Length: 344
Image (cartoon, rainbow, N blue to C red; front, side):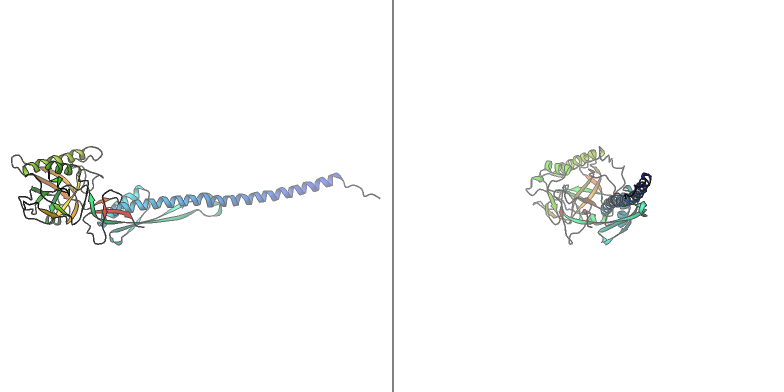
């Protein structure tokens, strides 16, 4: 005897119930998948944001440390400049340190990064930190010196930045004493002894490199009657170029020693010991190479004398990539010229 068929309505109800169970499971799985996807989004998007902000903070600390190092060994100035650079780059409350005396400055900062997707898994924010150390490396040789020398006595007296005026002398015929400035021949082939070549080097800077302790010729083939006008013309041309764009330095619109990069009034010259007159190719030794700011040049009518007023700059920094720059070592005295670089 055949079993009677089950009613169709019973089979349909069973199928509907099974379908509902499967649909419910799918909803649960989808919900779980959304949570997992949000977790992955948190790990990718928010982690990427955190890495980007950390790199941004590191670059800002690097810039602040380099800016501060340019002012070393003056710790107060270094912190001030580092703080300005840090503020310009959005660094919140940086801290400063000097890990190796006043030859290095350290800038550190911490910043909170707010999360978006990670909030789904209960992480609202995280902190990122960065530290940069920059230091000064004294320079043993630099290019673009002007062919002028002042005495070690005047350097030691006025290296604090006090304005001082010197009188041009001819070391062929006159003693090189405190209060004097003398013309030099920076060229090893003596071609700079000609007054027109001397004037070119004074106007544009000597293209070769001058080294500490180098012997330099301190005599020209010209008397003061031609040396004086050359000095006035060369320095006056520098003043005219400094007054034009992009420097716009007329001599009284910047505060010492805060002058624009490349200012034509800022030069490097030689510091040497006082020397007796010598009409047989006198020489001096470059005891130091220092940056100065040229203030005035004058030659009072009829006197035949020429005077140059200047201020010694506390520092002038170079890039290690600049042609002609020769780095010093631990024995090199820092007279204000240095390369600034990141150390860590």
